[in-house]
Image (cartoon, rainbow, N blue to C red; front, side):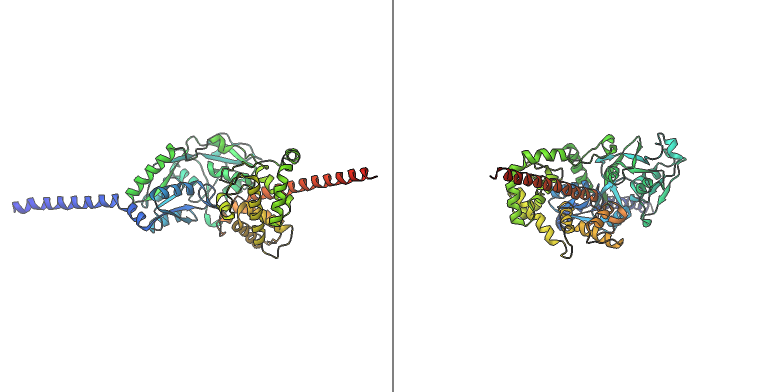
Length: 468
């Protein structure tokens, strides 16, 4: 009996130790080895302006760029798994379709049983946003009395709910189900709600399509951002934390101030006065390149010149924050496909840009007449054919004519509204930017053509006067 009584506790202790060690192995896991074996890192994210979207040249967005660098550091290919919302991100992790989720996420209770957070890699402020036609609320007590709307399962709703008992006691808000397709910012802009809480980065990206909204004031504390790593990926989590720490140290993660995110958007203005000067100073040197490109492409040289002026103001050494280069602002991927070897050689860049624009024009449906065909080609030059086609689909759905530029133009900004772009094949696009580009090209083209007509008329008058 004594011997049996002493063996049993020892047996249970050994069994417990065995289970503990087994559990530790699961926590350590071999997720990294599995990722390297399959040759790809699967990252779940949202299609949005602050995370991931398809630009004219391919994928863009802060989270995409971070994830791509992390995959490269592991020596594997990046595979993006898009989800419509945060519930979809959690499902992708739970169903083993993704190794991690990267979408400017906050740590909240729905993630606890599915994932573990990385170390915070950045912060984003939260703004109370109101309609500028109404009195500006200045204090939390004033906000609490207003009609507030918040989107279901959003960063904002998670933040409010996690702090409802302390910071937001006495506040009342309406949670908008995602199935309704209502946008809180649009409701505030239209006056159907008084105020909403909005992530600062998202507000900066979206306010350009709602110029009548503004920031009342930010919350005192910023929202920390995390990647969510599957629970059995302890080794993956360690690798993620090392990578993000290195990115922070190298300052490759943008940290925008509250002032920068809340400032009114500064849209470039059409500069007719500067163009008048550049027609005299820069055009004589560049005109032979525009005319040569016109012969090669079949486009009018004045049109090519107008596009070039909108893109760079005829500066051969121009660069954009997104990587476009040269006078016609050509992205590296397009440059390679066009055989452009020196993007900062004005003549070579102009000819390549004209070839690309002519190629896009040739891919616009043949039934579309001029000048709509050209305006749509210029829109595709900015946003890509995929997004242009999405805008045409939306135009048809709403009863407009998808073959008329004026009807398509009116729907471009819908590609910035979540309810609409999530229904489209190519997702989010900066529609306002494309509107602006085509508008400016039209203005510059007219100014260049008018200047040409005046010059031609002056030459004819001079010729008549000199004729004996």
